[in-house]
Length: 264
Image (tube, rainbow, N blue to C red; front, top):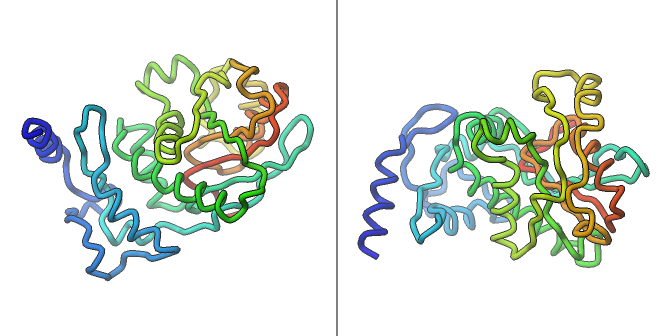
């Protein structure tokens, strides 16, 4: 135990303790201090209490303090669930669940996770996603998500090798671990290496991902309430392209779970 504690302390020392957004130094969260810490649904206090340190494999822990309190407070709270445009194929409406609307602070977290090797952003983002999804299921216990199967949006193998991981799979595992749910990272595969959606306009995004996904495990999807896990939902084109592939396996329902979604 002493060795694990020392290693956790060493890891903290090796990681710069400055805010990703504003660059200010980060002190320990104090839930009794008040100030600018948001209190929507009491979730921030719960996050501070449960998530100030995130467990790593082998019993080690690593600080999740990657934003200062001021920048945490600027995250744009979203209702737990809202509609997204109709999917391709059968034209089924897909529900999207997310804790936040996308803004500069959330973009900084997601870009750090995706492009800077910032895997330490996955636990706090996953915590919030699990909180939003759990809250949605509590509010609508007889709703469309009774038998959830988490399916991360896949990366093309070349991109995943280059990045070293799939950020959506990391988020799915965080959510699954906190809610006791099942993940199938092989249910969907990306069969075409597409351009980054963030560089394209709406029409080009739709064309970019059209036919880019295929089924990797139809048996696990059939009859299940599939929850497609992604980092951000902007125009919904990636979600629709994934839904078009998933609908061929006849899931019972489709939901998108993302860290953030565009306000419009």
